[in-house]
Image (cartoon, rainbow, N blue to C red; front, side):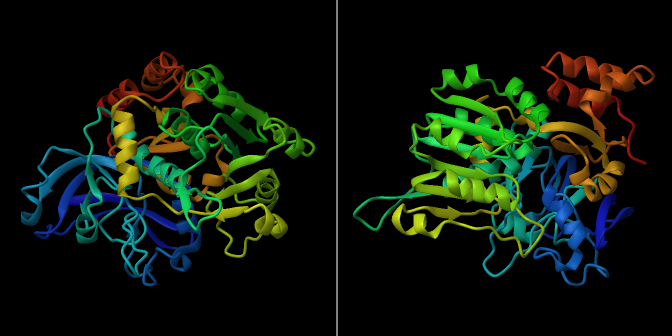
Amino acid sequence: MKTTAVRLYGVNDLRMETFELPEIAEDEILVRNISDSICMSSYKAAIQGAKHKRVPDDVAQNPVIIGHEYCGEIVQVGKKWQGEFHAGERFGIQPALNIPGSMHSPGYSFPYCGGDMTYSIMAREVMEQKCLLKFPGESFFLGSLAEPLSCIIGAFHAQYHTTRGVYRHEMGIVPGGNLALLAAAGPMGLGAIDYIVHCDRRPALLVVTDIDQARLDRAAKIYTVEDAASMGVKLVYKNTSAGDPVEEMRALTGGKGFDDVFVYAPVPAVIEQADRLLGFDGCLNFFAGPADPTLSAKMNFYNVHYSAAHIVGTSGGNTDDMIEALDMMAAGRINPAGMITHVGGLDSVAETTLNLPKIPGGKKLCYPHISMPMTAIDDFGRLGQSDPLFARLDEICKAHNGLWCPEAEKYLLANGKPIG
C-alpha cells in the first residue's frame, strides 16, 4: 500500500513524499490517519534534527514521520491484536511511550508511525505500551486534541504540596486555592483553562495572564467568567504587558500569594515572575518546553528554604491522562475546539511546522487526506467570496461561536480536495 507522508531528514529538512508501506507484522496495526494537530514539539524536532532527544542519529539515511497528535480509523489488525482491536474502529494515540531507557516516540522516531501521513503502521512499541486507545467520539479532531490535553492534565496531576510535620506530599493543585496561568492565552493555556474549570479538583481563584490583549479577549469570549463562576471559580484575565503586575496579582489573593503557578512560555522573565507570585508551599510548574538547552532563570532560594517554594516540570502525559481527556470530551465536560485557529491539508504541514512560531493564533489542525493551505478560521469568510468551500466552512464555524466543530470537519472531509 502506498502512503503519502511528511518526513524529517535533518535540520529544517521536511519533505512530503509518497512511498510504499511494508506489510504489517503480526504485532502491528495498519491505520488510516484522518486528523493531526501540529505541535510546537514537532517544530523543535524539525529545527534540531538528530540533536533532538527523540530523533534517531541516522535520520538523514532513515527519515522519520512527524506528527504525534493524531486520530483515525483502524484498517488492518495483526494476528496478535485481533481479539482486542478491529477494522473500522476509531483510535487515538498516546505518543509518550514511557519506555525505560528510551525516548522513542511516534511522530519523532519511527519510519512508518506518525500522524502526518495518509496511512501509517502502529509500531510494536506503541502496542506493547498500550498506547493505542479506542476513541468513540464523533469527531476526529477531538481525538487529535486528546494528546495535548493529556499533557495539560498530566501537568496538573504532577503538582504537589507538602504536609506540615510529616514527609508526605499531596499530589495535585490545592483545591479551593489560588492558581495562576502565566502567558496562557495560547492554545495550551486555553486547554488548561477549560480543563481546570471543569475538572473535579478546582481552585477558588484562577488568574490567566498574557501580553496580547487580542488573545486574552478571544480566551474570555470562549471560556467566560460567567461559566467559571457557575463552577465555583473566580476567573480573572489580566494583561501583563505594562509595569510589574506581581503586587496587583498577589493582592487578588489577599496578599497570600498563589498555591499553584503554571508557566506557559519559556521566557526567563515569566519564570521569575512566577517565582515571585508563589505563596507558602507554592508549586511552580514549568510547562513550556524550551528549544534552548541552556535556558535558565533566577529563583528565590530564601523562599525555597523558609516558605517551602518548589518547582516541577512535565513533558507529555501518560495513558491515564489521555483516557481522562477522552472521557471528559465524550461526556461533554470540556470542548477543546477553542484551541484551534487554523485548518489545512497534508501539503501545508512542512511549511507550517517550520514556521510555527511565526504564525499567530492557536493550534494548527491538519487533515492528511486533504490538500489545502493552512488557513485561519477567521479568513474563511474572505476566501469564501471566491471559493464555495470556504464560504460554507465560514457559515458553519460562525454558527458555532467562530470555532471549528464536528459539522465543519464532516463538510471538509466530504468536499475538500483529496491529496494528490
